[in-house]
Length: 114
Image (tube, rainbow, N blue to C red):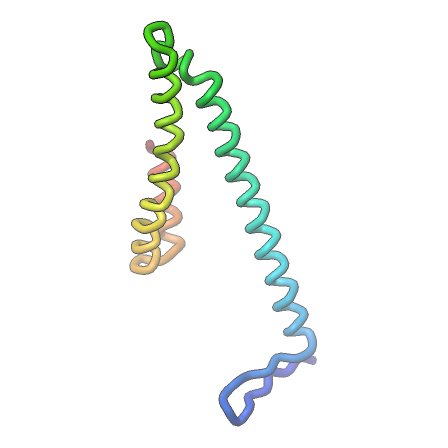
């Protein structure tokens, strides 16, 4: 059986199964965070590689000036590094105000529509 003990100075002490559950929960959060970060970095790696090697020829007129086409392609890649912190500020504010679940749905709908 698990027990939570309240001490005289107001702190709590968790024992038994509850401590093991907290430890397992922390490990699960760390593992999920690592997997999500790895997928995100792979996405940036794949897009960065495509932006340097393929996008200048496909989306920009590399016939006129290949250097300008490459810079324009890499500029679209660089915009993501500016948009991520701005999106975090905006959606973080709304997450605190409206709730995280609602904000997640709104951000996913925005990505789906855009």
